[in-house]
Length: 421
Image 1 (cartoon, rainbow, N blue to C red):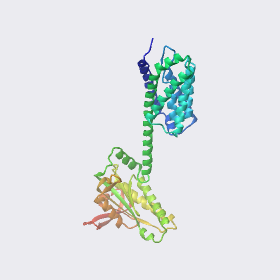
Image 2: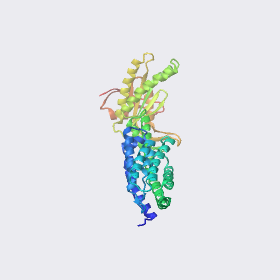
Image 3: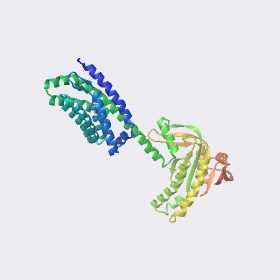
Image 4: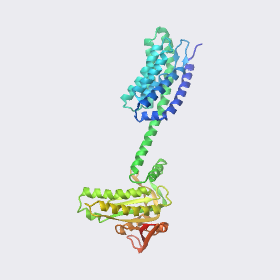
C-alpha cells in the first residue's frame, strides 16, 4: 500500500511529540542540569548517552515503514540534541547506539542511515565545542537539524544502491523527515533555552540575595527581591510604622588627623562589621552608611511585629561587641558609638530616579532617630518614647526627661536602655 507524504509527516510528528514529552521530564533531572552547569562526570555522561541513544532507537521504531523497506524516522534527533547539550562524547555515544541499532535492522539503506545518525550526534558535539558549551538559539538549532537531515538524504543518494531505489526513497521521505526533525529540534531547543534562562535567573537571584546578605538579613533580602519580582519597587512608597536605628562613632572625625587613612578605614570596617552582624542577626536592614554613621531599619520591607525590641536588642549587643573590639585593637584609640532608636510612622519605598533608586524610609520618625543618636553619649543606647512603649516590659531603662533636638519645636522624652531583661 502506497504511503503519502502527509501520512509520513503526521506519523513522524506524533513520534516527535512523545520524544519531546520525555525530553521535558529529562530536562528536570539532576543528570541533565549537571551537564547544563558544565559539571561533567562519568555517571551523568553515561546516563545521557544511554538516554539519548534510547531516544534514537525510539525514533526508529516510531517511524513509518515504506513499501521499499526503508523507515521514515526521527532517529537523528536524540543524538543531535545530545551533542548540542553535552558535547562530542554524549552526541557521538548516542549516535553510535542509534546507528548500530539501525544497521542491524538491515535494508538497502542500512549503511547510510546508520552512518548519518553517528555523524548527526558528532556534529552536534562539534557545534557544542565551537560555541564553547553555549546552547544555540532556537532558530540555529532548528536550522542545524534541517541541515543534518538534508545531509542524511545526500548520504543515502551517495551510498545506497541501486541508485533508482535510493532516489525514489529520498523523494518520498526527505520533506517529512526534514520537517519532523526540525520541528522536534525547535521544541527541544525551546525547552532547553527556557531551562537555561530559568537557571540563570535563579542563579542571579541567589547572587543578588548573597550580595544583599552583606547588608540586610536573609528575610529582608527575600522581601526586597519579591517586591522587585512583583514590580512593586517603582518610585514611591507607603506609610508604615518602622523602627529606625542610627549608630555614630564619637570623636572619629578628630582621628582622621592622627591615624593613617588605611588604618582608619580598616578600624571603621571592623566596627561596622560587628554592628552589621548584629543587625542581620536580628533581622534588620542596613539602609545606608554616611561616613562614620550607619542607619538600619526594622518592619520594612517585611512585616516584623517585634520590630522595636529587635532594634533595641541589636543596639545592646552592638555596644557589647564594640567594647570587645576596643580591647582587641590595642594599636588604635578606643572608639565609642552613640546609638539612637525611634519608632513611628514613615514613608517606606523606593526613592531616587529611574536610573538609580534605593529602598529606604523617610519622615519625622527617621529624623528624630537621627537626632537622638546625635545626642546619645558614646557607649550609650537612647530610645524615643514610642519605642519605649513597645519594649518597656522587656528592658531596663533610665528616663532622661524631655530633650530638645535641633529642628524640633517641642521636647521629647528619651530613655537610656541599660540592659535587656
